Image (tube, rainbow, N blue to C red; front, top):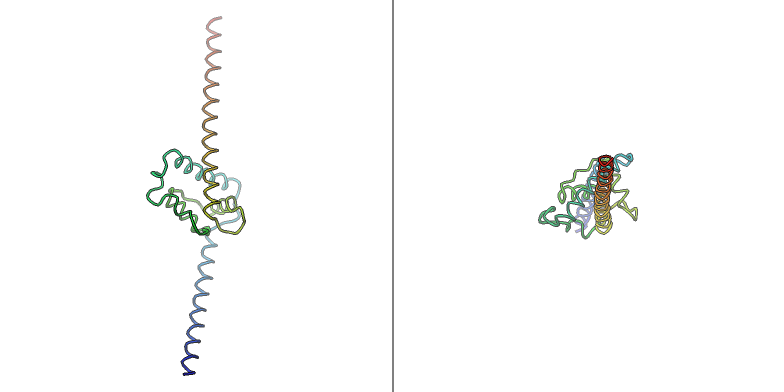
Length: 159
């Protein structure tokens, strides 16, 4: 009976060791998929990609994201690679390693190294609203500009 317990303990220790090595390898691989040495340009590109997706979602609703929609962002916190995959599946947005690092740094408010759904959705809809207002303001400016140019032309014709 003692030898069975000893054998079971040995097997259990080996399984823990294998699992630990597997977890370490998985973590090392996941860490290699995120670059934290991003530039401001990487950050802007990542934000632009997410902003475009947010604007599209705000204008077209769930048709943009397919069946799963935003459900993948609800619940447990997402590690950077899971976040990257979820963004790709939901919106078709492909983030580079540096863009991913920038987005995680931007979105992860509690600095836990993971992104929970509330953090992402707040950031996502904020980007969408900002982009929408920029487009509206740009269109308003363009109309004013065209109106002023037309007035100038009309004044020149009258002279």
